[in-house]
Amino acid sequence: MASQRLLIVGAGFAGLWSAMAARRLIDLHKDLSRERPIQVTVVAPEPELVLRPRLYEANVAEMRASLVELFEATDVTFIAARVGVIRPHDGQVDAVDSTGADITISYDRLILAPGSRLARPNIPGLKEHAFTIDQIDEAVQLEDHLRRLASAPSGTSRNTIVVCGGGFTGIELAAELPSRLTEIFGNNEKFRVVIVDRADVIGPELGDKPRPMIVSALSDLGVEMKLGAAVASIDANGVTLSSGERIDTVTAVWTAGMEANPLVKQLSAQRDAMGRVQVDRDLRIPSLPNIFVTGDAASVVTKEGGHLALQSCQHALRLGRASGHNAAADLLGIEGRPYEQLNYGTCLDLGGWGSLITDGWDRSVHQSGAAAKPIKQFINQKLIYPPPPDASTAFAAADPADDPPPVKAFL
Image (cartoon, rainbow, N blue to C red; front, side, top):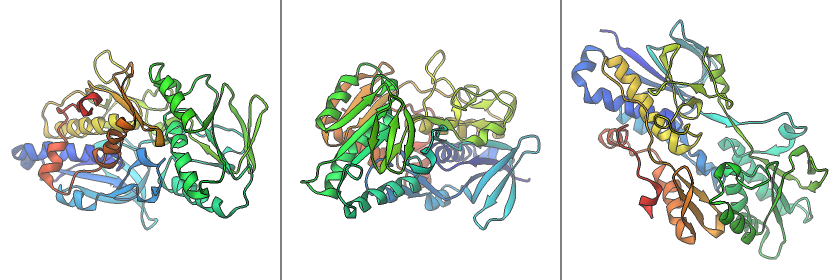
């Protein structure tokens, strides 16, 4: 009997765990899979997981983990290619492989896990002059630039870093920069790190409860906040705000706003304001029953009547397990399992000040400062990494029934 193909587009957190969850279910139902053989295939530019939550850190080129041995151990086929066209009615995708050749890949079920990208509005000079840490190559460019500043003449524009965006990523980057700039410039050089945001408060999406500690931490670190004024333009020598104020700098970093990968715009499906595809609780597109969408590209509630899943690593991990399980269940002819994520927490890195840990959607603060730092380090350095290249270990970790513990369980 010819194999059915479960094709997964993307090797990020959601794509990786879709593959592991699918192979787990197939392995659990060996009798069914002998009758209905299923080949799990991942297509992505590289067989690696980029540790995107860590791209604000130093030594950013190291923030990737190979998936080659894990895929071999779990019988996942990998195709090095970039998908450009989805043809739902043909059950095919068109891609360009690593040699530059055009290829077509057929599927019986498709899981789209293409992730998200930084929103880049049409602000004069943004594309030409702003750095970002959205993708690993862009983060490397910023790190290389910062190190080159050490050999440039000292002055206001060299010694000022402007972080455009006061959300989660902007806060973590700004809090990290003082220690990195001290390492680059030395202890005797004065520098400025400035966050600018059009919102009147720092971290508007993080809520009121953690905000006083965030403000206190940034103040202690010497990070300035210029709020209530949007970025009007960026040029090679500075940032101009909507208030008319100009900040001289050769280092402006854009961190504001996220949107779903534009690949999903090809689908005849409802999308939310961030471009995410609206899916059922099993992560299937209602109008395209052979296609599942997961991770940052999916718009779905975390439970019946609950909040929408966020474009975050913790949600992508869980969404991937659910989409892989349900797509494989569909091919095996068995009942799937609705996506559900009961626990939610925030762990914000605040550089040399420590970290801030909240629990629940109201973001009640459970721990902060230096005492919270080991939890953030555990998450960044262990929890989000792929499992070892061992099928039994990987499949055990891919069970969609295992809801992760609340953040306070780590305290």
